[in-house]
Every structure is written in structure tokens, then in C-alpha cells.
Length: 215
Image (cartoon, rainbow, N blue to C red):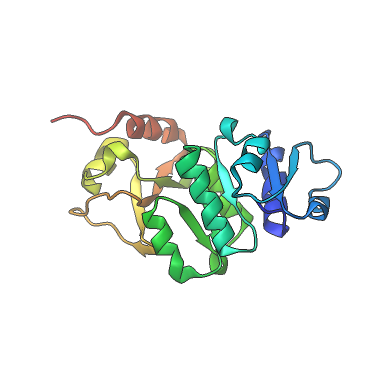
């Protein structure tokens, strides 16, 4: 939702990665930002209207980004996408960083304008192992952002690292970055920044998906 500079950039970036994209905006002239090569669906309307979302294909969607110019519209649309249509991968653009923590508690990933780029949203929409945040120049080491898997909530970070073979560089928790310690426990809503070798990435994600070993 939203076809401004961020929304149009995000839509083209997703399409360049061979994803099917629908864009919603209340102003039909905004779609000109997508350019003549955009092949996705364009829907004129309010992005928090259930009929508009349905027309855009939200029942088939894997992810939803609310990136209009209004905080309230973005949050309402994000909540409808999550709570009415059951999407788990939902990102909302928030101009007021002070409100971000509230929405994080509702399970909605928010990105404040002060640290905003379309690339950051892209990484939150795509599967967690699709777009590393960083690769070293040799392509050996990568840093990934991963939402705390449900199965690992309540588990100490030291056990997570030992089983997955990754290292937690830091954790985003309630809008703040914190360094992990051996006794720290993974909490719901955490976003883990993991360091791993490129060659072991598939194994790291397999262990995460499997969940903690039973003692």
C-alpha cells in the first residue's frame, strides 16, 4: 500500500526478484512512478479497505507492506492484513519512532523514517534466508536478520548458537539494539542478527526450523 518513492522502489525491487506484486494507492496518478515496465497489479483505493485488499490479491499474498505517507493509515492497513487476512509477514512505515514500540508489541514490524530505506523493508518481506544484510568482500561471511522463531522463544541464546552454529551479533528488542549474553533468553518479537559462514547458511536455517534439541 502506497506508491510514493519508497513504495514504487519496493515494488520494482520485488518484481526484479521475480515476485508477483500488487500496488494499492488512492491516487491513480501515483502509479506513474512504477514506470512502463512494471507488470504487476495496480489497484486504486484505500489500502485498509478489505474489498480493496481482496481485489489486490491479499488472500494469495505472502507479505504486505504499508508504506503510504500516513502513520494511521499504515497501521490500520497492517492490522487488517495481519488480523483479518492472517498474514504473518507485515511491515508498516512509521514516521513517529515513539509509536513503533507499541506496534511491535502488536506483532507488526515497523520501520521509522529516520532509518528507512526500501531495502530494509525488502529484507523483512522476503524469506529470512533470501537477502543477507551483509556479505564480506570474499563472500565467506554473511549477516542475516531473522525474526525469533516461535520454537526458540524462551531458550537461552548460548544454546541457540551452539545448536545452529551461528553467532548472535545483537538483538533488536522493542525498538532497541542489545548485545546478547550467555544467560539471555530469546523473547517473542526479537529480531536476531546472525553471523554465519555462507557455506553453512542452509544448515543454520535447517537447525532453526527444527527447533531446540530435547535434552
